[in-house]
Length: 377
Image (cartoon, rainbow, N blue to C red; front, top):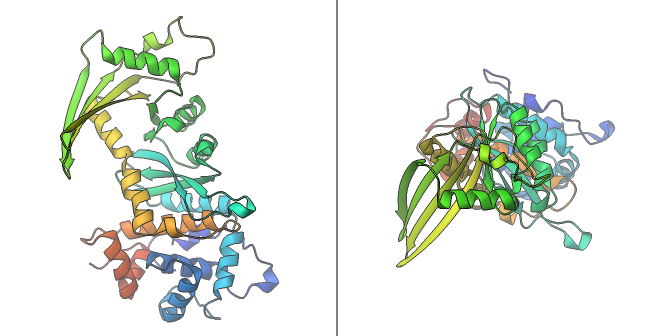
């Protein structure tokens, strides 16, 4: 493949072809390019991918020979099911590092379940994937599969260890509020912002009591937004004095976050249909953020829901995916994350949905996406 920088598929040269060498008729890089291009342009299963490849063979040959044409859909399925998912994820992370900007970002960590990729008759639960999202750049940085949401505690450190965290602020919901996870972030050179709930009962109780009647004036910031008949006002309050949390009155063995520098609260008041609801959320942070910066970080965390998980479900129809064998669900999740990063790259006026359709209709536009050059608008 061409391009001024190291090409996308060059990053995947470390992948080992799972097939016996004497049986390989279609090179692995040709299969990966076909699946990526077809997925990016809206194809949703291997039958559609094969048909797309047959119709766009001349386009694919701009990059690779495809001397034997397009493989059968069963071949595509077998190869994706057999690829080493750990190595595939590592190659993805290496590629994304070349896309990231040098300026530190807020990295949101969150999990998502692909509901249809299960085979309960064979004891296979739906794929649950923990992903890392660079909020400012809107890039998927990496992913780690786990058996269920309850296993995120073990999956998150594995994901974090593959990421460059220097200078980043890592945000995670309460499932990831674990001492070991906080330590992994600090060891990687980043700061953490962790949601605090009842899984740390003593700390949660003390934080709630403190913000209910703070002994001193605290720095705060207020934001209001709304739509669809809803008005939400959020008051953000931060406290940089945390020494009292570690006094002698704490019980032995109570978990503590390393390098804790701040506790914080978001108090949300929502008015909808004549009713008013109040909610308070609490956070632990290793950086001394001001209230406005804290508010931005909390808001940015939900970008992984709105700009990644929502896009996967609504634009890429992830909840309808039915891959249920081998490593197929994990590996196709990586392919979709690659496609999302590529289709977000052009700074044009089109929506993501329209960009995918345009990529299917316009070979030059699709080539610009794959080569990561300036796309046509």
